[in-house]
Image 1 (cartoon, rainbow, N blue to C red):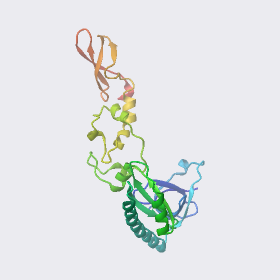
Image 2: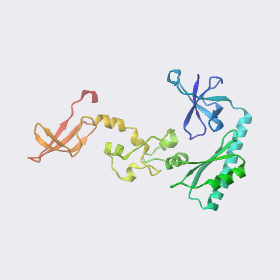
Image 3: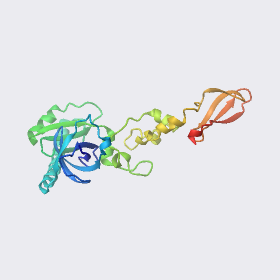
Image 4: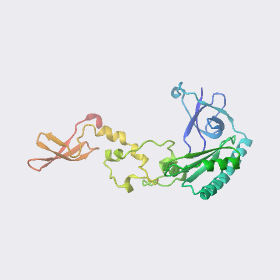
Length: 264
C-alpha cells in the first residue's frame, strides 16, 4: 500500500488515497475515486509506510491525469461558475435566506455540489429540484460554517500574517472561550475573535503548554498559606512560574516562585 495525501482544490482539506497501482510523484495531478464519484486532485503529501493505518480502507488513485482530463477539469470549473450564477438567481426568486459560497462538479459530472451559508435551517427542496432539472445531474446543497467562508475568501489576521485557515489549516479544531481564559487573555471580542467573527483558531496552538505550565500554580483569587502567613493570590506569571500573595494580616504583598527543574 502506498498512501498519498490529495487536495481536490486549493483550499480543500487533504484526503488520503491508495496509490499502489499508479506511478505517482509529488504535485502530480490525479483522478481519484471518492464517495461522490471521480474527482480531479493534486498530490501534496506522501505518507510514510510506518504511519499508514492498516484498519482504514483507502479509496484508490485511479490514474495520472492526461491533457484531455485537464481540459475537462477546466470545462467543469467554467460550467460550475455558470451554475453558481443560476443558483443565485433562483435563491433571489424564492427569497431564500442563504448565501452560496461556491459550486463544483465532480470530475465525472455525476454530481453538482453547492456550498452555502445560512443562519438557520433552509427549506431548499424546490431549489434542488429546479437545479436538477436545469443541469441534468444530481444536486447536493451543503450548509457550511462561517469559518469555511473565511477560508475561501482569505485575508490578514490580527497578527499581520495570512489567515491560518486559508494558509495551512485543512480542518477546524474546536476552540472554546476557556482557552482564552487559560492563557490570561482579554475577553474583549475584538482581541480574541478572528475575521470570521469566531474565536481565533490559534488559541488552540499553545493551550496545552499553558495548561502544563499552570499545573503547580495557584489560581488568582484562591486562598493560600505560605511561610509568611495566609493570604490571597492576586496575580500569576505563568512563564516565570511566579505568583503574588496579599497577606491577610499585614496587607503585605509577597512574591513566591514554584521550583520545578523540568520547566526550565
